[in-house]
Length: 195
Image (cartoon, rainbow, N blue to C red; front, side):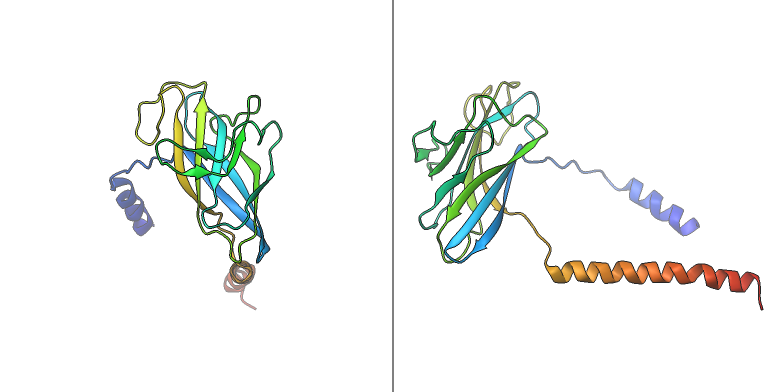
């Protein structure tokens, strides 16, 4: 008991570090096979204030015949001319989504932004850009544009999905723990009440 208490006190005395989350988080899942990949992008708004994301675009660099195939409800893929070029990064984005009615509110996320790619191998990173509005003025690093209409650029990576072997190893571990816990009360009962 003293060891546990000493460990807890040591952990509490460590200096606290503040971790700042990225204001816009983007990842994607990959499905399909060679020459027939589908990327489903999820956009999460962590900007804060009342900022709502109304514009999102991706550039599948190196993709072959990439086409926009999915549009979330309330979003439009024909509003902006494509390709759209981001002034700060100079990247040209071939898949663009816009909404006037279903913005991504601060603290929430939206998926369903899908792109089809006919490359032999799936993309391991995808450049993206997003714009927000209706919020408080932002005067922090990490955005471009005017403070009341911040824009963000970044690189998305595929969402981590555990391999089947990882799931099996975890289930075996839980089974061993359950077995050990199940046997433990019997050992205590035998020690208390010998035959």
